Image 1 (cartoon, helix red, strand yellow):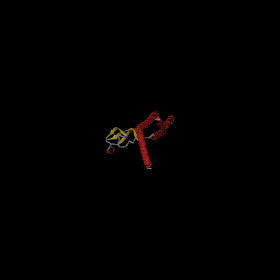
Image 2: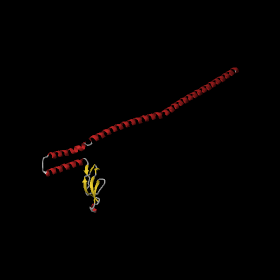
Image 3: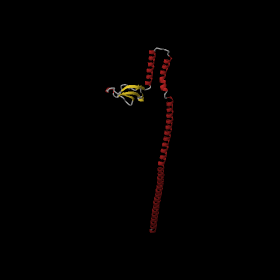
Image 4: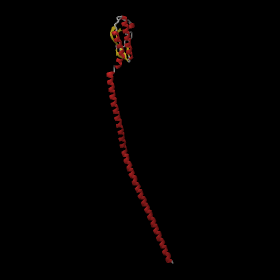
Length: 205
């Protein structure tokens, strides 16, 4: 009986040792598996990090290329618009040079018609002829005013080099006339507030 008990105890000890060894082995296997998984995760993380770094290195270049493409497109459009503007400006300038006087001629053609009728008139009445000439003259002045042309005021005005050209100085006219225009030898004209011909005047000293 004692032997049987001893054998049973030895069996129990062996079984416990085997169970402990299996537990230890399982723990080691789990540890190795965990370490292997961690190593795999770290490797994948490193690969992802390298991939992201590569993308980050490429992004500025791609962005710069896109900006260059946009700027190039804008430049080409601007150049094309400027070329069109130059062509249009040259065409308008040419038309203005060739046909710029059309408005003026059209405005004075009615006055020319009146002159033709006056010349064709066989009347010898001096007063009628004079009256007709005055009407044509007034009509012509009105046509000029319609184009922005008006006379330069000169007689009895203070001499002003912006509007007047002194062709004679007349002494002994008195202090109240000194520096004033006392005679207009040729009428001056302005167009749209710009002097196109100075009035030739005589000025009192």
